[in-house]
Each structure stands twice: as structure tokens, then as C-alpha cells.
Image (cartoon, rainbow, N blue to C red; front, side):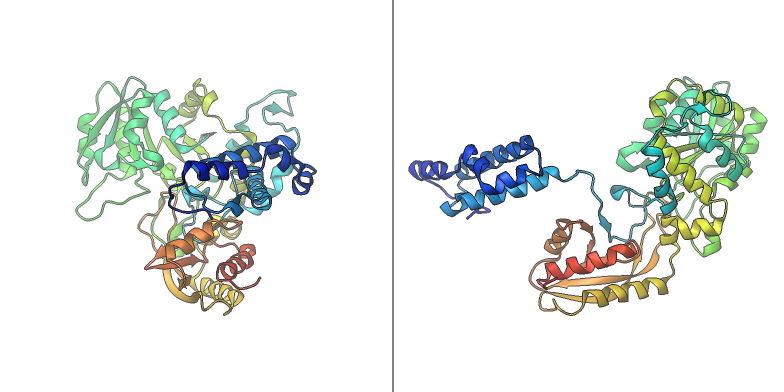
Length: 480
């Protein structure tokens, strides 16, 4: 028996336990291991054996093994088999998102559209014209694959992409303001995921930050009074991952652009979460679109590709031709460029936006955010029926109303009404049930509220419903 807590073993008992451990040759010669060798590399199996034997010795010295049967050949072979399974399992694995957070940063943010996935194999499995101009028969630019459609969709003069939005902000500041001043409102000095802060990014770029206004109020005159001969940029940062409410005021972009124009200072806006669809038309919170920001006079706009846009991780830079050209020629660009698979995913996602109705239907992030409550209730009832009543003595299953989140640092105050499948465990704690879901294959990531495990169907994909139902019944002890 393997104990959670250690017990004291005498020296003779400990030696008896150690002698009981099967040797490497005995394990390798067993019929079970010989069968494994036919399907898995011998070196990997040897690694698993050595790891298991070392683990058993440690457990014996710690007094956590108290039964010699745990060291029988069959028991140790079982440990080796499970360890082999762990070693061959990929580290990056699919999971089922039952949290209701649509663009969940820890779970990979946006799910790519089926059309994007269809393009992957042909490009990833062969050569492509990544940096080859087919018309001219010579080296080309990788950015042409998305620049044209970005300009088409937004009317920007020029466009380029890097590997994420923090990189986009960094290279823009390093190019346009290194050693010079960038004016920004104190109320917009945001921190994004992973403790990356706008002041830190600005410091790394070599720009000199000039803070104006206060946390809750910044006026146009604050910017104007700070402009001097060393001013390189006026920076506006959209607070997409938090909101300051109450006695607040910030300068509208159009006014800031007019001020910058009068003084010959470019205006840059970091949107963070770029949006191409007017969410206000669907009754959701107001979120500025990329097109609006450019129309209002921003000289440069940066935003993410994997948040509200619903594409892959990327940092997109749009704006004046001369500014984008300068950024593109920066040697730092080589270190921040995106690869061919990201370009494929971004191009195909952007192509869907040529028809906004198609984008809303086919881009999973938008489809989940805009899913009607009645559809979610039908989906939750369907999952409830698939689970059935079999495990009621272990887990009580019911439906309840709740709310989902957009996630990814977008629309932080928006509560999306949803329907939850609520699991009330009777033989274990809610935390133990949630852990059992994470340990399943595939792992199911749920949330715990009021000592119940909640499954939000908004983020559970239709093909995953049967898997979730089987997992619930397995954990509840119902034969599946």
C-alpha cells in the first residue's frame, strides 16, 4: 500500500522491501514489456523502467510503501505501463473548455475556423511561396500574404504583422521613438497578461515615457502642455482588460489626432484586442473597431490577432505608409516575424471578414460570444439528457443560469448570460471532482462555484458533448 503519509520502517524491513523490487532485466524479459517493445521505442521503455524503479526506492526510504505486494512483478509492470503512457503523451494536448471563458488565454485563446484548418495541411506539408514572388521569379516578402487583405478590410495605407501585440507595440516604439519622448495618459498605463506592463515595454524600446493627467481624468490640455521638441509620439492605450468608471474623462482619439496633426506628432493607438465587427449592433458592450480607430485619425494602430479577431496569435500593425515602412525596415523585425502557419491562419481568418455575416457564423470566437441564450439552454438540456440519471447517488446534475466571459483581456465588464450544467457531488468535494475532470482524457476544464462544479456549454463544442457526458458518468461510477 502506498501511503499519503510516511511510516517509520526499520533497516531490515527497508532492505527486505528493496530486495523485493524486480530488476531491470526481469522487467524487460516479461511478456508485457516485450509486447510494448513492438510498438514503442526500447529506449523510451528503459527510461520508464528506470524512473519507476527509482521512484519505488524513494517511496520505500520515505516509508510510504508498507505492503510487499506493491512490489510484485505485476504491480511494478503496471507502474511501468502507466509511465510509458505518460512519456508518449504529448505535452501540448487538446482540452475541453467548459469554463465559459471564450478567448481563454491559458487554454490557447481563439479556436480557429474550419476553413483555416483545411488550409494547414497543404501549406505545412509542402513548400510554399512564403518569401517568393511567383510573378517576378525572385525573392519576395512574407507580409504580402496579409497586407493586401488588411488594407482592403480597414482602408489602412499599409500593414504588417509580428508574432504578438506586445511585440507590435515594442517594435513600433523602438522604431519611432527610441531616445525620444512618448506622451501617454496615467490612466492608460495598463498591465496585460503575464505581468507585461506598458511602462516596461516602453522602457525596453528605449523610448522616454511622459505621463500626463491622472488615473481617472486626462484632458487635451495635458497632452498639449507636455508636447516639446523631443516628443516623438502621442500614445493612446485602449483599456481592454479593465475599466475605470465613475468620475472619469479621457481624450477622444479624434481630438488627440487633431492635436498631433497641428504639432506634427504621430498618434498611435494600442487597441490590444482588435475587433472588426460592430458588437454594439448585437446588443453587446461598445468596443471600438479597427476601422473606426483609423477613420478617427490614428496614424498607427496595433492589436492582437487571437482575441476578438478570432485568429492566431499575432501582432498586427496598421497605419501610415511611411511609419509602417520604417517599422518594417527595423532589424528587430527579423526576431519578431511570424511563421508560415501563422500567416496561413491569419490570412484565412481575415478572408472570412469580407462577409461580416459569414465571419460571425464561421469564426468560433464570434459565434460563441454571440450565441443566443435560448440556444445555450437547448444545448445544456441536450447535455443533461446525454448524461442521464444513472449516477444520481454520486453526483446530482441540474441546470442553472449563469454568465460567461469573453476573456483574453477583452470586454472585462461584459457578462454573457448562459446556461450551466451544475454538478453537485455527494461522495467527494467539488474540488476533487474538478480535479478528476482535469485528469480525464481529454482533460475537461470546468469551474467551481458554491461547492458545485459548473460546466458552461457556451465553450463546449458540439462534438465534445458526448465526451463530457461519458466523463461525468465514468466519474459518477456509471458503466459507459
